[in-house]
Length: 375
Image 1: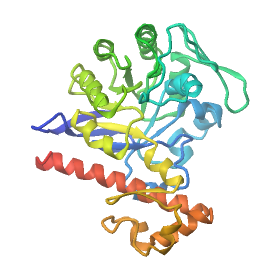
Image 2: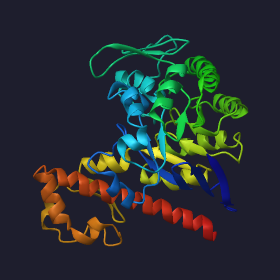
Image 3: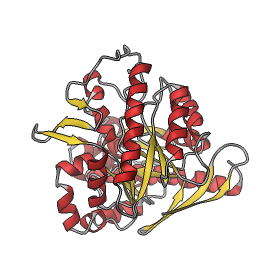
């Protein structure tokens, strides 16, 4: 992988760049849609390319469960197995330490919303975090499975993505500082172990953690950037509100080298994109455009449309008259509303295509604004 910065904004930290991989070039800033099972639900990859999507991220933990990395490897790796011929990322499985642990126990996400802080002695019910890795209970069959830095790297190497991530613990926004400090020490040890375990020429990103604590975020950024990673992920929780999130990203980016790419893990609501780009983020992955689409929510220049609502049955306008996607050129809100209410599979497909096209067009405009100096 080769990363180059083509232009930096004079007004903020935004920058225009290129990530060159064996499977294609990615123009940054860039949204990375989440293809959990090496698939974007309801869309084939020909359609995905037409949404202006440049790169996808698949989920190591879930692909390990099914169909298994050995089968993917025998099929020629993720690209040949899936038919996606552009760049692929795989996460490390570290997010599942949170999502299947404290996230599930406390029903919390990466932004804290008025919840009681967990004590240092708290432990998740369904995962067991050890110094060498994590024991999980499989959500498929309930069997116990272990994932540590060496295991994560081996699985990701067999999957064959262009860009892979170091194994880490994504800490809960409910964790107090002492817990996060202990977790960070493990994550840093795991980062070094991942570098030692890597045997392929895939690009490996280290992940910065540290929770909502400025000193821990800066400490992690300094440590991870001192290691020989090809790029950096910024993970974990992001405080109690979106302003806090921007502050936390700023703390980290200040400590990272300019010559390597920065990826923000699991953040990408439409309103998040411009602020994180202004803080110097190059790529970011998020389930929002695809998950919301499957639930009948379309993003437009007029705001979100809930296409499950009966009122749209009489609406003869396109989803967004300013959008150039084939859905907006071909179909009316009334028809797509009908599909959702009739529970037709085509509903999710059309809404997913539109949302991805809309998000990617928004980021494309941001790239152009950086290029022309408007941003």
